[in-house]
Amino acid sequence: MSKKFENSVNKSDLLETLGGPIGILESLVPGTIYVTLFSITLNVLLSALCAGAVALGFAIYQLLKKRPLTQVLAGIFGLALSIYLPLRDGLNNTHAGDYFVPGLLTNLGYAAAFTISILIRRPLAAIALSFLSENAKGWKTDREIYRKFFWITVMWIGMFTVRLLVEVPLYLTNQIAVLGIAKLVLGTPFYALIIWFSWLMARDTLTRGK
Image 1: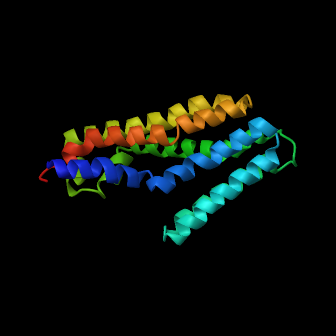
Image 2: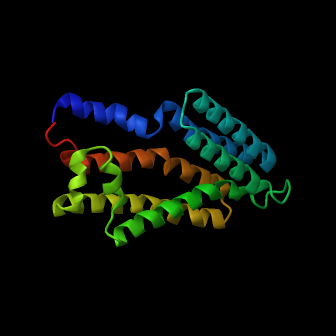
Image 3: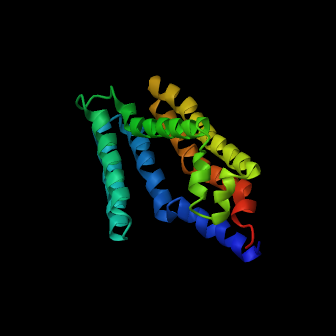
């Protein structure tokens, strides 16, 4: 494996997987605005609308940059849901934490999907990485490759599970500010770390022959 190839994957591919600089900001800024404004003003309407306006701005920018329409529409749907849930009973603060419900449900869905893939012996990490390299397709016949992708999938299950174990109790006890901080820490930084470790575990297979 050449040093040039490894450096290319380490830097550009990792950044691209995270959505690029704009994608990273898009995942961090709206939630930060919501938590910060709500902590200062206790005004759920102001907090949700400001966070929503910023998120919509990112979505429009991504659309202008020719990002796939399905991704943009999915982001807008998630945005609309995040604004609707805390405001569904009016302007009181009863459901302020519901801004984070779509994220919790997303993590639950991914955790379930990855777990099912393990149970049926079709690890999602193996399927995903097979699109990146012909070498990865050997997981169906090579036990060593299968075992490697099995543990990568387990690691992703761990990420989603950790998020739920930390964030759900904070949501249920309505600790909005702490929940927002947990979302930031366990969001893009944690995601990047898991991607990096996944690459470290899979690179020998993916780069074989390069």
